[in-house]
Image (cartoon, rainbow, N blue to C red; front, side, top):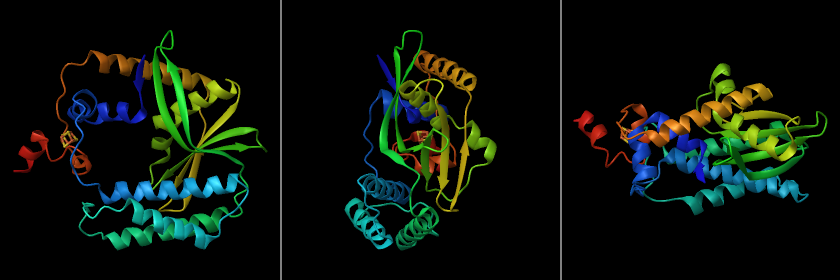
Amino acid sequence: MVYYSHSKLDTFEQCRLKYKYRYIDKIVPEIPKTIEAHFGIVIHKTLEWFYNKIMEGTIPSINDLIFYYSDTWGEEYDPNIEIIDKSQTLEGYFNRGVEFLTSYYTKNFPFKDNTIGTEEKIEISLGETGEIKLVGYVDRLVHNLEKDEIEIHDYKTTNSVLMKEKIENSRQLALYSIGIKEIFGREKNVSMVWHFLAHDVKFSSRKTNEELEELKKEVVELIKRIESTTDFPANVSRLCDWCDFRNICTARNSKRM
Ligand code: SF4
């Protein structure tokens, strides 16, 4: 059985050298966490806790939500956190999280969308005999009773909002749609919902069964390409600043000299 994840596929497409470092050489990078990673983890953990409470039958107050966020920020804090964009500060990020959560709370109260799971593990079988497994975690699953539809919710903590076409073509939630249909049946309506917390907006989209079948074929082809690859060149780009291997990558460091 071969196991893949969306980020493994993404890494291969972004930079093969990074792929080699992480998945072939299995190097565990000794590098400080970036503020973006810290921020994303804390926001996701806070919303996970929040919706778990709702599923247990209690709606935490907005103060409870911010307290939990603040505590989690402290628990996850590492004094070596690196701020790549020097125009930003740690305090600025913390305050931004308070703003995101406050406006999310205000906009979505009283949270009656019928959440049925958080951080749900999704497994997809691919290939002729299901020999490839693709594993991922959904931020939040909702059963929309009005539409009898399963919604896959994803939180984005970046400043940028992706263009509509880019969202609709993004692979991650479409792959999770396949996994959800493996659980609930091929004819179940499934939608994908992205929350761009920095802009307090959400987008939703759906894929047809035909589009999902096409995606499966593309992913199997990509995995075949990965398995037969022997050459792992570097792809130096602005994303290198956030790469976990930036300190050991000779390609990136020689370009900076
Ligand atoms: S630093 Fe850049 S070039 Fe080097 S492995 Fe990371 S993404 Fe690739």
